[in-house]
Length: 319
Image (cartoon, rainbow, N blue to C red; front, side, top):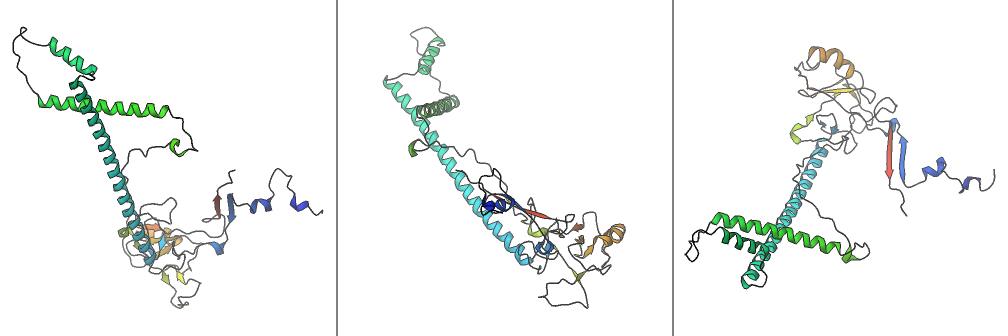
């Protein structure tokens, strides 16, 4: 093997080792059992859940972690609402400024018409219509009738015409200037568009995609521990068992939570005992159709169970 065989730069493709050293593109890595979150671990802090709570989809959290996360989301939502109200107020003020400009143009045109400096075509048309519709012989005194509603309609129509005229003038002025990204004065800008009121709510961060999560919808979880097992809280090995078959719980088992009584049972006991009797095997509590929730597991380390691969996306270099 020559000296420069491993540093070949004339190839049109990357080798496997070169591709792994890149800082961009999508990278995929298979996960082992040691990389999986345990079935009784919190989805936020990744430690063994303390006072575990579950959402309606089966994601497990510590009580302290989920309360802190929901509180932080509510504060963020409050800030976003305040920002939205400020933008909405700015939009209303801009509309008022545009209306005031249109109103000032209407008054200016009216004053010019009264002084005889520039009588608009609409004034001439109104004068002609008034002469054609005049009742009675010439030289007789006509009665002047003032209609307030008609005057308001005419004023509103005049303001709308002035608004359209202002928009046309602004469009024509923009056409005369070519956009240029290098000059700040000629940089094209895009409007924000109309603001839409969005309903914001707290979300479950463990789900993909995230689903709504409320504090009142959290379900307490009670794992059954082995009586003669190791009760040391610092131990990494879990001593949780199924209360029916006494099987040790792990990521290899599918676990189901009973919402009314908070007990956790394995899949075998749930299918053979719980669903048929429609009651909990521990406390004999009656269960409904939606009272059995499957607890989500991150993976087993095997391709057939849970997550077996993770990916990381990076931005490619753009010269």
